[in-house]
Length: 262
Image 1 (cartoon, helix red, strand yellow):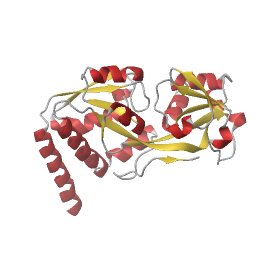
Image 2 (cartoon, one colour; image 1 turned 90 degrees about the vertical axis):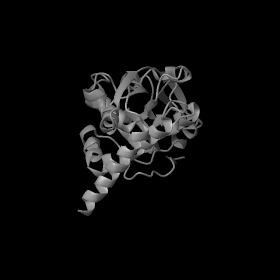
Image 3 (cartoon, helix red, strand yellow; image 1 turned 45 degrees about the vertical axis):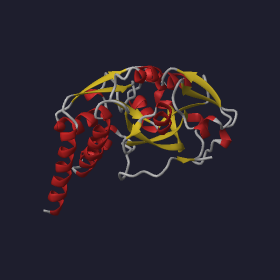
Protein backbone atom coordinates (compact mmCIF):
# COMPACT_ATOMS: atom_id res chain seq x y z
CA UNK A 1 0.00 0.00 0.00
CA UNK A 2 2.91 2.35 0.71
CA UNK A 3 4.05 2.26 -2.90
CA UNK A 4 0.48 2.81 -4.08
CA UNK A 5 0.02 5.84 -1.83
CA UNK A 6 3.30 7.38 -3.03
CA UNK A 7 2.20 6.87 -6.63
CA UNK A 8 -1.20 8.44 -5.94
CA UNK A 9 0.49 11.41 -4.23
CA UNK A 10 2.63 12.06 -7.32
CA UNK A 11 -0.40 11.82 -9.61
CA UNK A 12 -2.36 14.17 -7.33
CA UNK A 13 0.44 16.73 -7.30
CA UNK A 14 0.79 16.34 -11.05
CA UNK A 15 -2.89 16.98 -11.56
CA UNK A 16 -2.72 20.05 -9.30
CA UNK A 17 0.08 21.39 -11.48
CA UNK A 18 -2.08 20.69 -14.52
CA UNK A 19 -4.85 22.81 -13.04
CA UNK A 20 -2.51 25.80 -13.15
CA UNK A 21 -1.37 24.82 -16.64
CA UNK A 22 -4.45 25.28 -18.80
CA UNK A 23 -5.05 22.35 -21.12
CA UNK A 24 -4.26 23.07 -24.73
CA UNK A 25 -1.68 22.74 -27.45
CA UNK A 26 2.02 22.70 -26.60
CA UNK A 27 4.29 23.63 -29.49
CA UNK A 28 7.67 21.92 -29.53
CA UNK A 29 10.82 22.68 -31.49
CA UNK A 30 13.05 19.71 -32.14
CA UNK A 31 15.38 18.48 -34.84
CA UNK A 32 16.20 15.22 -36.60
CA UNK A 33 17.84 13.62 -33.56
CA UNK A 34 17.34 9.83 -33.63
CA UNK A 35 16.63 7.83 -31.59
CA UNK A 36 15.23 10.67 -29.45
CA UNK A 37 13.31 12.52 -32.17
CA UNK A 38 12.83 12.11 -35.92
CA UNK A 39 9.75 12.37 -38.12
CA UNK A 40 10.29 8.92 -39.63
CA UNK A 41 10.52 7.10 -36.30
CA UNK A 42 7.64 5.31 -34.59
CA UNK A 43 5.86 7.77 -32.28
CA UNK A 44 8.22 10.48 -33.54
CA UNK A 45 11.13 9.15 -31.46
CA UNK A 46 11.69 8.07 -27.86
CA UNK A 47 11.78 11.57 -26.34
CA UNK A 48 8.69 12.69 -28.27
CA UNK A 49 6.80 9.62 -27.05
CA UNK A 50 7.89 10.33 -23.48
CA UNK A 51 6.80 13.97 -23.73
CA UNK A 52 3.37 13.03 -25.06
CA UNK A 53 2.95 10.41 -22.33
CA UNK A 54 3.81 12.96 -19.63
CA UNK A 55 1.54 15.75 -20.90
CA UNK A 56 -1.42 13.73 -22.17
CA UNK A 57 -3.01 13.15 -18.71
CA UNK A 58 -3.12 16.94 -18.27
CA UNK A 59 -5.21 17.34 -21.40
CA UNK A 60 -2.45 18.65 -23.65
CA UNK A 61 -1.86 17.93 -27.29
CA UNK A 62 1.75 18.18 -28.42
CA UNK A 63 2.58 19.65 -31.83
CA UNK A 64 6.15 18.85 -32.81
CA UNK A 65 8.09 20.59 -35.58
CA UNK A 66 11.27 18.89 -36.80
CA UNK A 67 13.51 21.69 -38.05
CA UNK A 68 17.23 22.23 -38.63
CA UNK A 69 18.93 23.05 -35.33
CA UNK A 70 20.51 26.14 -36.88
CA UNK A 71 17.02 27.72 -37.03
CA UNK A 72 16.46 27.55 -33.26
CA UNK A 73 17.61 31.10 -32.42
CA UNK A 74 15.42 32.63 -35.11
CA UNK A 75 12.37 30.59 -34.10
CA UNK A 76 12.79 31.51 -30.42
CA UNK A 77 12.84 35.21 -31.27
CA UNK A 78 9.44 34.79 -32.88
CA UNK A 79 8.07 33.22 -29.67
CA UNK A 80 6.34 30.41 -31.56
CA UNK A 81 7.42 27.51 -29.35
CA UNK A 82 6.83 26.47 -25.73
CA UNK A 83 9.49 23.75 -25.49
CA UNK A 84 12.81 22.76 -27.04
CA UNK A 85 13.39 19.01 -27.18
CA UNK A 86 16.20 18.21 -26.34
CA UNK A 87 18.97 20.55 -25.16
CA UNK A 88 22.52 20.24 -23.84
CA UNK A 89 23.72 22.60 -21.07
CA UNK A 90 25.41 24.80 -23.68
CA UNK A 91 22.14 25.11 -25.60
CA UNK A 92 20.26 26.10 -22.44
CA UNK A 93 22.79 28.82 -21.69
CA UNK A 94 23.09 30.06 -25.26
CA UNK A 95 19.34 30.42 -25.78
CA UNK A 96 18.26 31.34 -22.25
CA UNK A 97 16.01 28.30 -21.80
CA UNK A 98 14.60 27.10 -18.48
CA UNK A 99 15.93 23.56 -17.86
CA UNK A 100 13.91 20.56 -16.84
CA UNK A 101 15.59 17.90 -14.77
CA UNK A 102 17.79 15.77 -17.04
CA UNK A 103 15.90 13.23 -19.13
CA UNK A 104 18.88 11.38 -20.56
CA UNK A 105 22.69 11.41 -20.47
CA UNK A 106 24.66 12.29 -23.56
CA UNK A 107 27.81 10.17 -23.61
CA UNK A 108 29.69 12.29 -26.11
CA UNK A 109 32.69 10.65 -27.68
CA UNK A 110 34.33 9.14 -30.71
CA UNK A 111 33.43 6.58 -33.32
CA UNK A 112 36.35 5.16 -35.27
CA UNK A 113 37.09 2.65 -38.00
CA UNK A 114 37.59 -0.76 -36.40
CA UNK A 115 41.19 -1.11 -37.56
CA UNK A 116 42.09 2.12 -35.72
CA UNK A 117 40.40 1.22 -32.44
CA UNK A 118 42.62 2.00 -29.44
CA UNK A 119 42.63 0.49 -25.99
CA UNK A 120 40.23 2.20 -23.52
CA UNK A 121 41.72 5.32 -21.97
CA UNK A 122 42.08 7.55 -25.02
CA UNK A 123 42.13 11.21 -23.90
CA UNK A 124 41.61 14.54 -25.62
CA UNK A 125 45.32 15.25 -25.18
CA UNK A 126 46.22 12.10 -27.12
CA UNK A 127 43.98 13.22 -29.97
CA UNK A 128 45.72 16.54 -30.60
CA UNK A 129 46.15 17.10 -34.34
CA UNK A 130 43.74 14.31 -35.34
CA UNK A 131 40.90 15.07 -37.73
CA UNK A 132 37.43 14.78 -36.19
CA UNK A 133 34.06 15.12 -37.90
CA UNK A 134 31.59 17.38 -36.07
CA UNK A 135 28.20 18.91 -36.91
CA UNK A 136 27.88 22.62 -37.61
CA UNK A 137 26.06 24.65 -34.89
CA UNK A 138 26.13 21.89 -32.23
CA UNK A 139 27.02 23.19 -28.74
CA UNK A 140 30.00 20.94 -28.04
CA UNK A 141 31.70 21.36 -24.63
CA UNK A 142 34.39 24.08 -24.75
CA UNK A 143 36.97 21.70 -23.27
CA UNK A 144 36.67 19.54 -26.37
CA UNK A 145 36.67 22.48 -28.77
CA UNK A 146 39.86 23.80 -27.14
CA UNK A 147 41.61 20.42 -27.23
CA UNK A 148 43.72 21.05 -30.33
CA UNK A 149 41.72 18.76 -32.60
CA UNK A 150 41.32 19.38 -36.32
CA UNK A 151 37.56 19.71 -36.79
CA UNK A 152 35.83 18.91 -40.06
CA UNK A 153 32.34 20.46 -40.26
CA UNK A 154 29.41 18.42 -41.52
CA UNK A 155 25.65 18.83 -41.71
CA UNK A 156 24.63 15.74 -39.70
CA UNK A 157 25.93 12.85 -37.62
CA UNK A 158 24.82 10.45 -40.33
CA UNK A 159 26.88 12.31 -42.92
CA UNK A 160 29.92 12.25 -40.63
CA UNK A 161 29.65 8.49 -40.08
CA UNK A 162 29.56 8.02 -43.85
CA UNK A 163 32.65 10.19 -44.25
CA UNK A 164 34.41 8.29 -41.46
CA UNK A 165 33.67 4.98 -43.17
CA UNK A 166 35.10 6.44 -46.40
CA UNK A 167 38.32 7.50 -44.63
CA UNK A 168 37.69 11.24 -44.93
CA UNK A 169 38.81 11.85 -41.32
CA UNK A 170 40.11 9.93 -38.30
CA UNK A 171 37.14 10.10 -35.92
CA UNK A 172 33.51 11.21 -35.76
CA UNK A 173 32.42 13.02 -32.60
CA UNK A 174 28.84 12.22 -31.59
CA UNK A 175 26.67 10.72 -28.90
CA UNK A 176 26.94 7.05 -28.04
CA UNK A 177 23.17 6.41 -28.30
CA UNK A 178 22.81 8.34 -31.57
CA UNK A 179 25.75 6.60 -33.21
CA UNK A 180 24.56 3.15 -32.15
CA UNK A 181 21.12 3.87 -33.57
CA UNK A 182 22.48 5.07 -36.91
CA UNK A 183 24.77 2.08 -37.20
CA UNK A 184 22.00 -0.36 -36.28
CA UNK A 185 19.90 1.10 -39.06
CA UNK A 186 22.93 0.95 -41.39
CA UNK A 187 22.33 4.57 -42.27
CA UNK A 188 26.07 5.12 -42.45
CA UNK A 189 26.42 2.92 -45.55
CA UNK A 190 27.63 -0.60 -46.26
CA UNK A 191 30.76 -0.09 -44.17
CA UNK A 192 28.74 0.61 -41.02
CA UNK A 193 29.76 -2.68 -39.39
CA UNK A 194 33.37 -1.45 -39.49
CA UNK A 195 32.60 1.65 -37.39
CA UNK A 196 32.82 1.18 -33.62
CA UNK A 197 32.61 3.24 -30.42
CA UNK A 198 35.89 4.22 -28.76
CA UNK A 199 35.82 4.11 -24.96
CA UNK A 200 35.79 6.18 -22.85
CA UNK A 201 33.32 8.97 -23.55
CA UNK A 202 35.10 12.33 -23.68
CA UNK A 203 32.21 14.06 -21.90
CA UNK A 204 29.01 13.08 -20.16
CA UNK A 205 26.35 15.76 -20.39
CA UNK A 206 22.78 15.87 -19.11
CA UNK A 207 20.12 16.26 -21.79
CA UNK A 208 17.16 18.46 -20.83
CA UNK A 209 13.85 19.69 -22.11
CA UNK A 210 14.16 23.47 -22.47
CA UNK A 211 11.14 25.56 -21.49
CA UNK A 212 10.95 28.86 -23.38
CA UNK A 213 10.68 31.77 -20.89
CA UNK A 214 8.10 34.41 -21.61
CA UNK A 215 5.61 31.96 -23.08
CA UNK A 216 2.19 31.66 -21.38
CA UNK A 217 2.30 29.30 -18.37
CA UNK A 218 6.04 28.63 -18.75
CA UNK A 219 6.51 28.13 -14.99
CA UNK A 220 3.49 25.82 -14.74
CA UNK A 221 4.69 23.83 -17.75
CA UNK A 222 8.10 23.36 -16.14
CA UNK A 223 6.44 22.12 -12.94
CA UNK A 224 4.24 19.73 -14.90
CA UNK A 225 7.32 18.29 -16.63
CA UNK A 226 9.08 17.76 -13.31
CA UNK A 227 6.19 15.94 -11.65
CA UNK A 228 5.48 13.99 -14.82
CA UNK A 229 9.09 12.81 -14.99
CA UNK A 230 8.86 11.54 -11.41
CA UNK A 231 5.71 9.58 -12.23
CA UNK A 232 7.30 8.22 -15.42
CA UNK A 233 10.22 6.88 -13.43
CA UNK A 234 8.15 5.55 -10.54
CA UNK A 235 5.85 3.39 -12.65
CA UNK A 236 8.68 1.81 -14.67
CA UNK A 237 7.95 3.37 -18.06
CA UNK A 238 11.26 5.26 -18.08
CA UNK A 239 13.34 2.12 -17.63
CA UNK A 240 11.35 0.31 -20.31
CA UNK A 241 11.94 3.22 -22.70
CA UNK A 242 15.70 3.09 -22.08
CA UNK A 243 15.86 -0.63 -22.76
CA UNK A 244 13.68 -0.51 -25.85
CA UNK A 245 15.65 2.30 -27.51
CA UNK A 246 19.10 1.53 -26.02
CA UNK A 247 19.44 4.98 -24.47
CA UNK A 248 21.83 6.21 -21.78
CA UNK A 249 19.57 7.14 -18.88
CA UNK A 250 19.72 9.19 -15.70
CA UNK A 251 19.80 6.89 -12.65
CA UNK A 252 17.99 9.38 -10.42
CA UNK A 253 16.39 12.81 -10.71
CA UNK A 254 19.57 14.70 -9.85
CA UNK A 255 22.61 14.42 -12.08
CA UNK A 256 26.10 15.66 -11.08
CA UNK A 257 27.70 18.40 -13.09
CA UNK A 258 29.06 17.30 -16.48
CA UNK A 259 32.17 15.10 -16.28
CA UNK A 260 34.78 16.19 -18.79
CA UNK A 261 37.94 14.15 -19.26
CA UNK A 262 41.14 16.02 -20.11
